[in-house]
Amino acid sequence: MLLQPIEITPAETRTPVITEEEAGALARTTVNLFKAWNLTDAEASTLLGGLSARTWARWKEGQFGRMDRDLKMRMAHLMGIHKGLRYLFKEPARGYAWIRKPNAAFGGQSALALMLRGEMADLQAMREWLDAERGAW
Image (cartoon, rainbow, N blue to C red):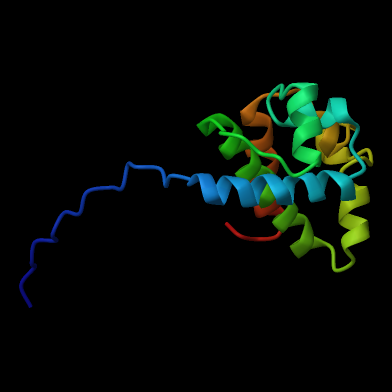
């Protein structure tokens, strides 16, 4: 059998766009997730990239305005973190509590402490860590 050339397929370089409708659903879900995680308003604001107290108060009332790409991606990472925890813990309450517990894998810090450093990369790293921990790699 002769070798045949393999057709080159270009890599997909475009990140999927989160629509405004999807962003609204993410925001509603994020508010509920933060309630389950028992976050303070300051913690919620930090995880959402410095969202103002006034805007966060409106979100909790179900009023969502336009969201930039950074905020949409932060919420997407938070949903990925939530999904990873749901896979790791059969009882949702254990996953919700886990984020505040000291963890040897994080040098004795909690997952929340790491995420509260405020960078998008912190959320992404936590999501990737949880994915790897559940064997998604």
